[in-house]
Image 1 (tube, rainbow, N blue to C red):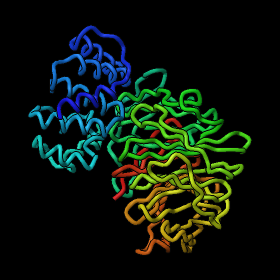
Image 2 (spheres, one colour):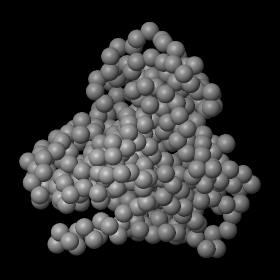
Image 3 (spheres, rainbow, N blue to C red):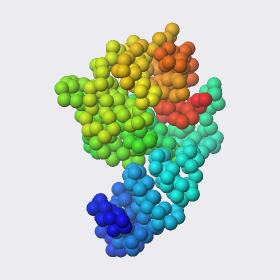
Image 4 (cartoon, helix red, strand yellow):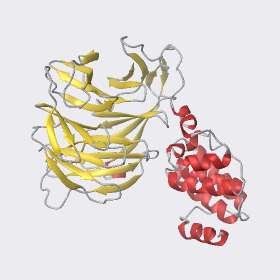
Length: 421
């Protein structure tokens, strides 16, 4: 079995920079990790493992850490299991590098072998610690930065989480990567994704048309926290075509480009969402919904909605989607492919973003000259809206994203936070 395991590893070994022996490879690997070059870190960790004596659990753990940090979560869990079988000890149960690995279903088995905490306890450290009160503004990289403020109490005004250099312009979407403690901002044109680090407040480019293959404009994205993927939709400027991109969330590395179905014709994808089971749904400007099943390589036509000009889509679970369009909110039953208008006494239109949380829809809504963060509670069947709650309002365009304990929104060069109960 050990020989077979070594053979499989040898067959999977990627090319790596040259290094003399296991110690040299390890030193170079750690240096690559320190400078954030995660692919080189992974390749050098492989080389160190190859050059070491058989079953060196220290170097196996180095490789597992490199696999986790470079987004190879399934490989990391296999390696951790192998280390556990050999009786090796490590800090995988608490090390932040394995935060996403601890979200995998197989972690429970590995945790039991090493006597680690149960998965919920192991992932409790994903939430950022309470932040200090705002400090005086300080210059950093040409932008005024402030420390994150404590979350707002229910019903209170939103608190400023941080400020950043907004010279790239107003983003069209934002997501919060809790594990890496950073915000991802998507800019429409030129097509660009940037990262705002929650700790350092630095703004750096994450993915662009040249690195990720984006078309002329970005039109939306969705984060799959469970699998560490980022799904991005981009469109050609003339509206002739769109494409779905799969990126590695931790690094922005391009993983796959997913085309529209054959015969789809001209299409401009407007929004994208991902369900808990990993199915991706995208809706285009002509109200067509497309689906990508886990493991598939091409989008498939799913259904057409009687809802003009859709602007946002959200998955409530594996079986229900909500779409925002000119006529209001639409509930889609995935199993029956039936769509029905969400009944409401209010005008539920103008949503730029939409997310599902505990029986309610939360998002950013354009209302006249104002932009609102609103929560729309739904009845048990999910077909009738209760009176909405306005959580925040601003005269300037904003974009927002749901987090585990609240809602972040970008207002100019400021990211603000609303606590949700």
